[in-house]
Amino acid sequence: MWDYNVEHEKKPEQQARLQEARTLCISCPLRIECERYHLALADEFGRCPPGVWGGRVFPDGRAQQAAA
Ligand code: SF4
Image (cartoon, rainbow, N blue to C red; front, top):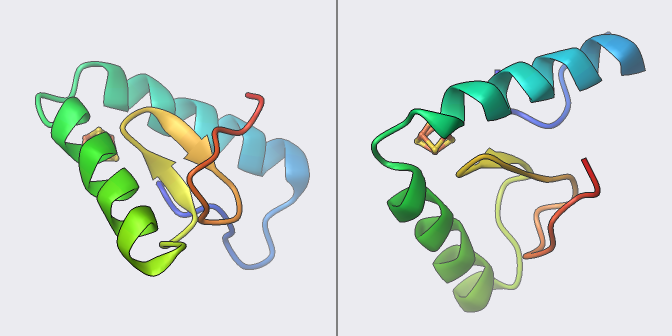
């Protein structure tokens, strides 16, 4: 659900899935820690796995928020 790319998934399906993941993140008790962990990984390694972290979409694994 939180991966950025899923094999054979079409763009509209991907967008719907990522939005659903972001919605679930909103009520996650780990949201702040999750986003901090992502940013710490990005700081240390320059990038980290792309996907949804802390309710934000990171399409290329870098510490940038997608326009979503
Ligand atoms: S990606 Fe992070 S904030 Fe979203 S549900 Fe998973 S742990 Fe919680």
